[in-house]
Image 1 (cartoon, rainbow, N blue to C red):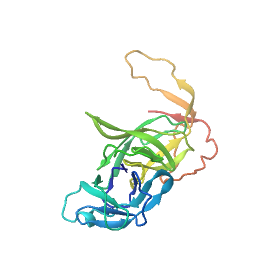
Image 2: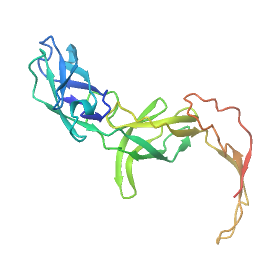
Image 3: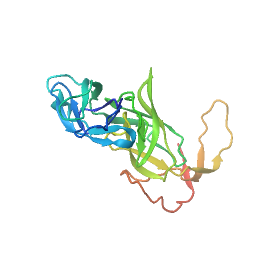
Image 4: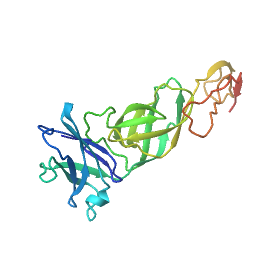
Length: 239
């Protein structure tokens, strides 16, 4: 088996190839595409797993469109296995997240849209699910959404320290986007009064809401360990 089954055209994805009798050799190699680009591999004897890194797509398939390529492994530098299929995909990026902020307790469903986002590449043996969101340094599982008004990735915000961090995603459990889209986590507001407490059923009443943390502003720049500062005291929101 080969995992993950795909990664970005930029290369550098760490592949794991599992099979039988892989340890009975001395020259471990991985070979990619019609150009037969060869890269060194290392063996993990306990799990009979070969590890190697993918080259750039332009190196192994210079005249082909982005997509599937053959990957084979060699144990003696000469003969190679039957090929596995590996899928190169365009580099992904995030253009928008919705919402862009949520309470420090987490539990907010965040929708991520952008360029070249895709469903998960099948993956096994990884410490992270194939589809993963990363809030700063905190990772959470994600899912692919393909409905009428949304095509992209969805995930639940984690519990974390209030402040602004970068939100990134991956579809193969390791190669994250590098978009630096800002996600803000804040201390939940607390309401102390509402005036007037009632109004006509036809609406139109002007409400004044008082409380604390009604207008959090942790700053525009991602910071993994921000200091939320002292409680600013009561605030008032008016339309």
